[in-house]
Length: 443
Image (cartoon, rainbow, N blue to C red; front, side, top):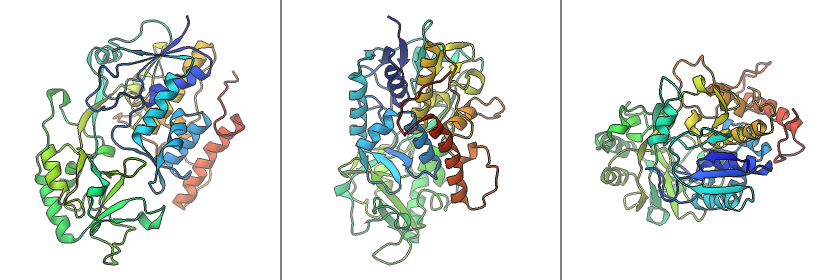
């Protein structure tokens, strides 16, 4: 039986398998769960969200919003799932993690063209069309096999997850609900600090003891987008007050004034029984997390249901190895997708899985590859990770800086972003009658 193999059932792998299966082609989706899990995984389900439950901004004049709109045109399974399990998060799209994974797992396992196989893959497939979407924690023999693709080996960076607390353990004598500038439905819990409280908190944070990293995790190289709060704090006393603890757009209803600093908490699940500390990715020892984070006003009696963790993420040297179809330059039957390619973020990973899946189908049917224009967000991200002129290749998430400039100059940033988004959507709308239509390659 002719089929396409997808290795890895994270967001990228599930999106790739979904595209292939919906094109009428049999898929073998291989995943090592539940018999084996990475250090960051907890669930036996597919498409597990690890670091955060936020899929970032939803509005179309944002980079994250544009990315998701493009994915809708391409028939994203992850966005279908997100629409079924979203939780209130102001202008962002956040989801109940368990419902999100449950939905995707059920869809994948019940698709007639998808066969799920549980096993640990130890080497790259030697024949047939395959998509490798094993994620940023790929290790062992498979990692060694992948590293042999390039004489430069694998690159690596570090990612960190924030702690989660129960809602009923938060003290609302100090904390309050609000969104910045009153946008949304007051979806965030805010823990305000005065100057004295902030100074003491910062002092203890920078002195707190971090967990020791294994030899495998050295040397330390931290990705800026997931900087541990204690590392950021060591850059200066005001570094986190102008970062994740910025008080702009918020007023404490008890004082009527803007606080000196604010810690925000975002819903972790649909029921609102758990909240995660926004921007508090950390590698502190669990006891130190409890001690220091309990100094935050409103969290003095907080019940931590999950402490923050830190782990190494690995990605291939995509500029050297990949075509813009996401296939290997020296093996067009082998595709890569997800964070292992150097895209950074949940939706970015899922989007790359969509493109890899579409192009695996095109390869199977002997059609030309789909290469999105560089003025689309997905096309720009893929262009970035395949750009050999990049001097120090590092992971990249959706942002308007990767897009080519407009033909006309627009000074207002919001209007400029809206115009950049419109340029992409106009291109997509020429290929589809409506959002969610199945992509058909006309070549």
